[in-house]
Image (tube, rainbow, N blue to C red):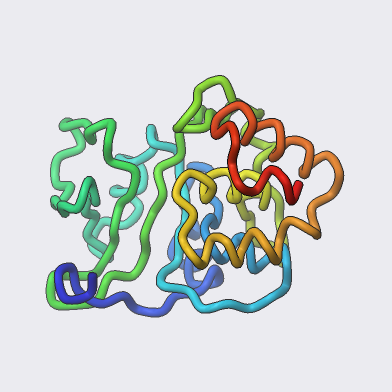
Length: 197
């Protein structure tokens, strides 16, 4: 991937806090960093995944203007986002950020299917929760709750996703475990993680 798209600069959740200071919309950290914050077990990270509402892309671009360029990462193609009047394709789920084409990528922003009040699982609209219930805070930083992150990882389980599940699942409280189990049964019946839950 580096050969095709270029390298990534190592970033931490604290870097995202500094980057997004003054940004008005809701945001949180997703991906492997969210799992690590919950488990306390360090693991390697390919990138940092801040997450925002899909509807807030223009606001994010205004916040980053003059600092980082915004690119839509969609189905293996990268396209600079230069006109807020052109909506992102529905298939676009990530924005990549970097200062210029000569520098490494810095952030992989995940676009969340949510309104300011309600989150909807992008692979099965029957699964929803109040937005506030899918987030939690640790050391002053807001993260995606682990059971919700594991649901997102469940669709295509890569080796690192299996490790995240193995470390995280035993630490889930009964309500979180039950929610993940019922969500998997609904969206991904027969999933291999169900037996462990």
